[in-house]
Every structure is written in structure tokens, then in C-alpha cells.
Image 1 (cartoon, rainbow, N blue to C red):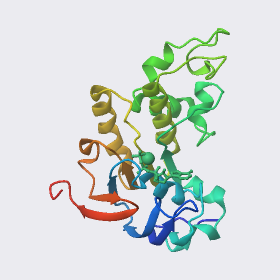
Image 2 (cartoon, helix red, strand yellow):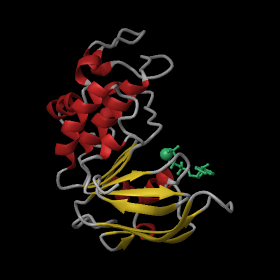
Image 3 (tube, rainbow, N blue to C red):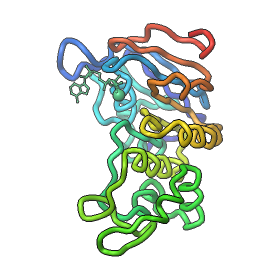
Image 4 (cartoon, helix red, strand yellow):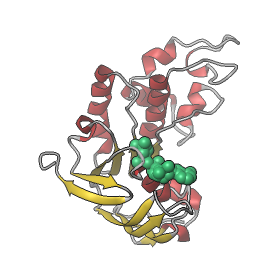
Length: 235
Ligand code: ATP
Ligand code: MG
């Protein structure tokens, strides 16, 4: 299993082309110091999602290595790896289960108090309490999916954020985690996200620079390479 220490994440010469010649990630080097918050930007197709998916081992990189606290991620169990990483993916799909089960997914033993607190932090508690599925289940017991409640993209995103807040893992990956929210809700969540990020090592992907304005460092990716990096003011 992965032995979590300070939370350093190191990509060394990482290459991944999905078996093709172009696209993907090209010999990329990037180190996040423990607790460092890095914003990842770049145009569509630059390789941002690929990079974070490699960290979670959705795929194994074709070349190079990824280490967490000095341990190569291919040498630890996938379960122990994913336990230490909270991720909101770009296409966050939910389980066809209750809202409660969806939020508890990363930490099933959490109490109701903790569940509701996470939902409030994600600006989700109010709309959840108004839900009713066709079978008559309400609130946190409402079922998600074809036979259940239909949620908007922004509502699904807030459920995914509640899940990751509750999980409270030491490494946080946010891939366009607030892109479907209106600016008012996004600003409110951004506030709590800064609290949530304290002490954690964070990679946040965003198209809007405002979303990642307060990160320690911003890295610009193009065609699988880092083409620029610096503070928000520098760029
Ligand atoms: P966006 O801002 O649109 O989310 P991105 O920077 O996240 O873009 P990626 O999803 O990492 O981009 O994709 C990088 C490149 O890899 C693209 O050329 C894409 O077509 C390709 N790619 C992504 N996923 C796969 C896959 N599963 N199989 C093959 N090619 C893929
Ligand atoms: Mg992407």
C-alpha cells in the first residue's frame, strides 16, 4: 500500500500518447511540493485531463514515472492510491443510487452531521432537501439516474464536490470542478474550497483563470508539454 507522508507528487519524464504519434503527454516533468497548489491551464486537448488521469492510474503512462512521497504509483495498490486522492473529474457521473450513497462514496463511515456539512460546503444541501424521485423518496434518499431524479450539470458537480470534501484526502485533483456553476455559486464554493485545500497538495484544472487565481503556481500546458509557468500575476 501507499505510505502517505507529506504529500509530494512528482512526475518525471512522463510520456503518454494513447498509442498514437501525437497528442497526450510528452516527457513532462512536474513536482508539487507537499501542500503546494498548482493550477493547470491550456487549450482544449493540451493533455491536462490525461495528466491527472495518469496520477490516478486510469491509464499507466507509456514512459517515465509518477511518484507520491517517493513511491512509484505502479508499485502500490490502486486502492491505497485512490484512497489518498480526492478527484472531481471533468465528466463527473453519479452512481444510480441515493444522493446519500453518492456523497458517502469516498467515506462510507461518515456521520450524518459530516454528510450534511459537506453538502452545505458544496452549496448542495438546499437543493438536495427539495428533491423527490418518482418512487417518492425525498432529499438525501432520492435516487439518482434514469428511474430517479434528473440533475443538472451544476447540481451533479456540487454532489461531486460534496463527495470530495467529505472524503478529505490529502491530495486533491479538481478537473474543471466548478465549470458548470453560475458565477455566484462558483464564488461561494471557491471560498470553502480554499479552506478545504489547506494542508493538501492540489492540482486544479480550469479554463477560467479566475478559478485558479489563488494557486501557488500556474502551469500552462500545450501539446503535452509545459510551455510556461509562474504566478497568476506573472502570466
Ligand atoms: P480539455 O480542456 O478539452 O478538457 P485536455 O487538456 O483535458 O482538454 P485531454 O483530455 O488530456 O485534453 O486530451 C489530450 C489529447 O489526448 C487529445 O488529443 C485527446 O484527443 C487525446 N485523448 C484523450 N483521451 C483519450 C483516449 N481515451 N484515447 C485516445 N486519445 C485520447
Ligand atoms: Mg480535460
